[in-house]
Picture (cartoon, rainbow, N blue to C red):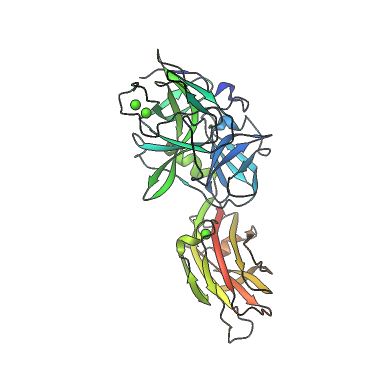
Length: 402
Ligand SMILES: [Ca+2]
Ligand SMILES: [Ca+2]
Ligand SMILES: [Ca+2]
């Protein structure tokens, strides 16, 4: 058993004293789905884990209430507002549902390779300076920084004000290596005030997943206090909360297959459709020979594990480069075995967001037995005078509420 003294962190579970900063601070513009998080002002960190969901530390969201918190990504103008906050009953982790679709996210990690792994820590907290003999916190909240550390131990710890299953690392440097587990890494960091709720990421098959949520900084018995070399930090171990996450958030159903039914595909692939990061499937219009047929049409397919969901949301971001053009979305109705128009509007020349929410008998759009879902996105020429135009599909995803 290792003994920890909880120094900073948690600190009364107050947003005024949020846990932990990336220190030393390496400023980054990467990790686009990590954002600023707070209530009256941004002062902590959260990470997107689905089209409508964030993961953060419970001590960033007080003890009750669903609304009043906000989230902001560096590269996007939208401010996302909380509509539902699900706090773990005892441990320092919370799920948050927001009011508008997020442009991208990292999946929570569910495996066992997180223990001992080198993680990438990201957060908006304070950074620090080294004066030759010790560190001190400097700077202020609001700049995204990253660094790395080895997540050496996985252990349940109760620090009084904060508890949970944590991944724990030591801050190495200047000849100090508390656990003799190697270090410092080239970009070795610990946490500081304002990093609370931010993620530790790990590459899994070439993609980042969330293995930890920043929770506390502290020291081992007799060891130096944070942020000195030899101090330690703890991240909520996300894999230990897989069922908490899985049972409470909506299901993300990505497009698993798509087909261009009308028009000529010029660029993009399946991965282009995953996030709204301006990497698009581009389809050039072709004049239809039949009356009332679209000039551009793609069919997207996905699936859900929920046979009788309470809500299906279909999120589409895209544009048509000609005008006037009508945008129509159809879902396949497995009960009538036919396509049903669920949304129709004027297309926009630059990316715009369409969210189709189905709460009345959404099960008709889910194939019994397989959970398959399919949709068609069409652009209809209403008198375009452009020589050449087409559809640009940036993001398509379903979010399914059990
Ligand atoms: Ca270390
Ligand atoms: Ca070490
Ligand atoms: Ca895209």
